[in-house]
Image (cartoon, rainbow over all chains, first blue to last red; front, top):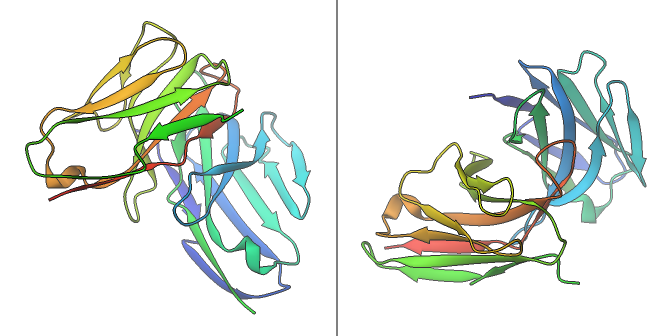
Length: 111
Length: 113
C-alpha cells in the first residue's frame, strides 16, 4: 500500500526553539493533514491543506503543501512546553478513498 | 456537541472472548473509520464506511468485523480476541471520502491476555 515517510522520528529541543518536520510520499497527494496527539488522547487536527503550494498558519504552527504534491512540512515557532506530543501527517492520494498516516514525530522539550 | 464518542475507554479481555467497540458521532458526517495504533506503527486502517449502508476493508481487517448501524454509529467487533489485537483503537469521521478532514474519538485501550 501507499506509504508516507515522516521525519524525524523524534526531536529533543530546548524551549523557545523552532521545530520543523516533514512528510514525503511516492504518490501525488491532493490532501495533507497534520495532527497532534497527547498521551492517552486521540489525534487532534492542527492544519488541513488541499492545494499544491498552499501555506497555512494556525498560531505558531505553519504547514505547507509541497509544490510537487509529494511532500508537506510543519513548522512550530518558539516552542513551549505544551507543544510536547506526537505529531502525525496524513495524506490522501489522487483517486484514493483512504487517508494514509506517517509514523509520527515525537517532540520532547527541555525547559 | 460531543463530536466522536467511543466506548469503552479501557477493556481487558481474555484470549477467545468477544466484544464490540462502539463509536457514535454527532457531526452528521457520512464517512466513518476504525484505526488501530501500535507503538512505532502509526495509525493503520481496519475498516471504513464511506456512507450509511456500506463498509469496506482497510489495511488490517483480519480478525475484525464492523457494522454501520445508522449514519451516527459504527461498531467494531472482535469475535475471538487474540493477544495480537492488544492495541489502542480509534474511530474517526469525515464529511465525505475526499478533500475533508478526519476527526478522531478519544480511543479505546484494549488489552488481550
